[in-house]
Length: 151
Ligand SMILES: O=c1[nH]c(=O)n([C@H]2C[C@H](O)[C@@H](COP(=O)(O)O)O2)cc1CO
Image (tube, rainbow, N blue to C red; front, side):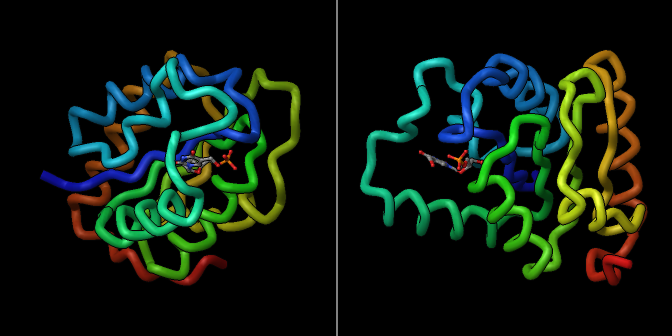
């Protein structure tokens, strides 16, 4: 079973935590989500009750281990942006999900990563998620290479 690293805002704001939990549940169909805690209601804006260095090192290990990275990027978060940048350097297959209805503009530094192969950036409505995930993971399983240039 593939390992999936899910990214969602924690200190950037927990407004979308319930949505993250629903995305994580859907991702369960495609693999094991290493960062399930990102969708836990009990995790507030303070984050995990752990030393910050330990959180960073644990997460970087998980990111390295993961085959896929799925990031919900509607709520701006420094940590999520950092994780995506690291994942690009690690040549992971990455799906960034931006909710059209959130009223913000997605950073060019994320939207500009889209290459429709190793990095997919999608504007979405929640009802579209099952189809978007199905397409992302089936293309991945059809052997699209992870290390495509991001241009
Ligand atoms: O307590 C934490 N636990 C944790 O796993 N993270 C990771 C996972 C999330 O995808 C991302 C959220 O970053 P931020 O807290 O800057 O919004 O960082 C972040 C924190 C707090 O910064």
